[in-house]
Structure formats: structure tokens, C-alpha cells
Amino acid sequence: MQTVPLVLGAVVGALLAAAPARAGELRDFEHHVRTTDLYLRELIRDAVDTSPTFRALVARLQRSDVIVYVSREGTLPSVDGQLTFRVASGGVRYLAIRLAWNRTPRRHVASLAHELQHAVEIADAPWVVDEATLEREYARMGDHGPEYGTVKTFETKAAIQAGRQAWRDYGSEAE
Ligand SMILES: [Zn+2]
Image (cartoon, rainbow, N blue to C red; front, top):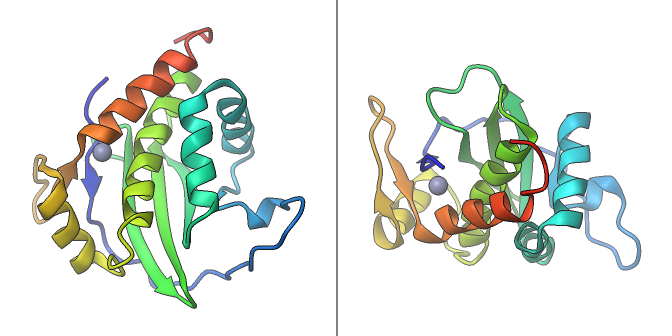
């Protein structure tokens, strides 16, 4: 699989409503990995069932102050996925993962696992609260990736590994 850079993209200013965690059965909006895309919702359920790696990433985020919104986009440059820091608000840190639209389900699962590993890295770094602190953290612990104009990218071995493992776990599906 190609390496998928972590992009320090533009801040999206909109504040997203925070749902307080409750004991017992989780409703959809209480999950820390959220999407309004029905295809992605189904895919995430499948991946949680199929891939122990994917399941562990979601479980880790579920116990964190990080909430991730996942969407598909047709306009991503030559990458499978991107993660950006959106905003820290009310004790919750919001991230956005965008996946390239025209990929196979298996490749979507692999790229999402890759990006969710980055989300876990941010969950493990409570001092990351905006793009500047995100960049500082990845300059410290990540590897520099290619730059797209003014956009710097970073990569981690753990994210590459998570993507590869989820790809193998989901291996019974057609590529
Ligand atoms: Zn990455």
C-alpha cells in the first residue's frame, strides 16, 4: 500500500456538538468514530467485526477525548486518506478523516485503519490541541513526508503497519 500522509490542512471553524459518553449501550452519535455516510457506516461495522486491528483502534478511541468524523471525497490529491485537526472544544478534540471516494472497500478499510492509528497517536498526546501542536508532535515523533505547496505531511511506522494489518484482516474481500 502507498503511504498515506497526515496532512495539516485548513482549520474548519464549525463547532460540532459534543455528545457526553454514557454507560451501557452506545447510540450511534456516542461513538467516537462517526460518519453520516451510510456506506462508510456499514463498512466500519464490517471492519470492526472482521479486523482485530481495526476493532482495537476504535476501542481505544472510544476511551479517549478524541472524536473522528469520517467522510469520502472525490477531490483528494494522490492519497487514499487524510487526517486533519479540526477543533478542541468543551474537553473534546475533533478530527476529520477524509477518504478518497473511488477505492475498493478493502482499500477503504486499510486507509481508514491507517488514519485511525494517527487518531490514536493524537489521543495519546493530550497536548495536541490545534494544528501548531499537531505539527510539533509529528515533527518530534513522526517521519517527514512529501510537501504539497505549503502543506506539510508526516507519517508514522505504526500507521503504515495498522493499514497493512487491516488490509490482511479484511483479506477475504475482493480487492
Ligand atoms: Zn499516515
